[in-house]
Length: 176
Image (tube, one colour):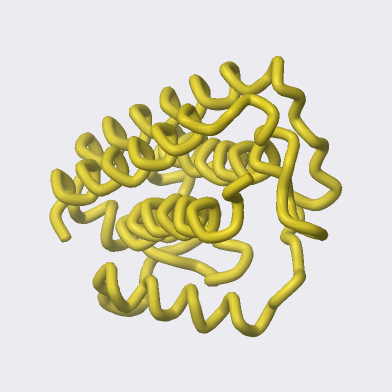
């Protein structure tokens, strides 16, 4: 998938998510299915997962190469990344990764801030995706807590799928 298509995918998946969240009644922000995150926690989790990626993409590329190394395999396509993620999720049912453990429940007054930040961060990711060279997208790697080290192109595509995954969860389980 080329850079433009990935940037468009990021925008489409986030637009669908934001639209769904904005169209929910305010009181649903602090609700969730039994023993699951609230709507607000899900949104905060997505924000917490995109910010480190944007931060990493702001670093000098030689530093990323030094810190994490270079890819030792070809880049997977979007469908292969989705399939691998679903397989990995099956192996960790009920586990929460470091950045989202003991997550606070965002208040309704924080909803607008979180949604605005999500939109800002996804626009940054689109810009950075278009700006980075194809060589760096395919050879520089970043660590992912579940998927392991991934080429940057893959981790950006995974980010689009991650948003889609949570949006589908909302649609299926968060109808209050």
